Image (cartoon, rainbow over all chains, first blue to last red; front, side, top):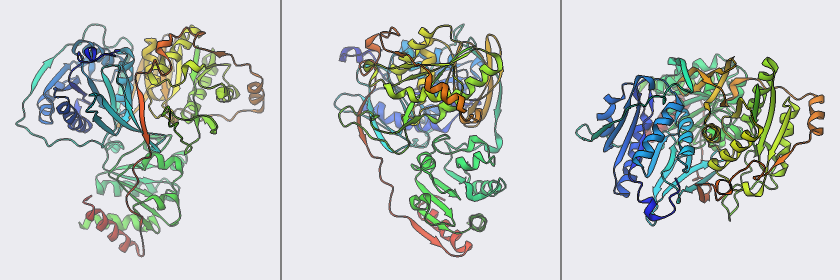
Length: 338
Length: 262
């Protein structure tokens, strides 16, 4: 809502983190958000609340306390078992109106990015997408939100000084979770789902969890990615073995996806996903700008290519010149020895 | 079925420039293209019309020259187009943009379905689609990879998630955002191109769609870009290794260890 005076803004208090719940399990990005939000709450001398929406989420209360939340606000209902964005948004809008948080953070995941815009529009407040940096401006108390735009070619800092709450989605794998402290205690506040909030817009009929792809690209520490240089679909089974050896996920360039070698859900880049892995291993990917914008903010980039002059080989921290079909199996063997 | 498809004109990749004054993206004088995700939204809208009949209306908010992307939509089968353009819309963030688009959808009237690309490649927010659904009070589904069923009052869609997908029945009217997997866009025919050239595209301003001035443009935008800067530079230079596969693999493991990564 419009909060253009200090008195109006003072009516909004506490930092909220919306937990990312998948198949009843709270996801790692939530612990990262709690880590970042703990600092914000301390800077604002207020409480940190974790919002748990889903089926069976009550049992995660102790976990969210252990990762830094002062209070777990829980709506535990079987009708929230599957992702009904309109239902979750309706609940969240009601909670926001009732408890008036100053800041609300959610993961910049497909669910977070579907749900929070719906809430921000109704709550008439600002929302910043896919943040990689958050800080409190000591002068005003406003949340300073830094995010990449233009595929990471520009970093923009965004402020929302006249509206409350301030909302942001935060990129997974950027913020640091606090150490798990099982002795940490907190409060619990339970709310119910109200009639009409669930199921009036959509019914989820079927959920498919891709077990082969269980380590998803946005959460993976290691990504092994393949491009045109693989020459065929078979090459991806080799990359999968390297990814498995590292406990990582398999990515792909647009060229590999468009050749039908691997499903689109693996595509990294402008028309695929943006990833933020700790280590990105590009195998036979030349590195068109459309690919680079999706992976250039990974911490450590390895490229394997016969041609040392490709854009990706020049961008990489480690450029391995040679035949990936000889080098990748050797890498798998070398890792097995460690 | 009456379908509105939202398309955005975006600067071609790697031409990002920021106005030092407004901190907003400079769009003047830069080669503009149709947002890549929107091409799939247009194609899907046309396919639905070909399957069950109806009308496809392409809608874009932007400067006067954004008619180019609307003509692209016409060339591959959209029936007509509307350009939402007014100085008063300048500087709109995603809240104000979704409001302006919602006003246009209301003015078009009797719309059953709005299709958008998953996100635009300039702002990368993915917020306007669900924001538009919220402004209209309609159903939404994001990252849609297939529409297996279309009925009178509802659709069945398949949504892509990080860990798999789900299938859900969504009540109409609805706003969907689509990903690349949903179809293989067609190439415009000569006839399509001619139709696009000849098409008269009406421009609607803020007053035409009854937009409240306090809800559009900079004033209607809760967020402000206060600073822009280049991303942090990547660390040191590239370490290049070549030699036997075993040597390379050893060097790879050594580097990862040195960095504390394995």
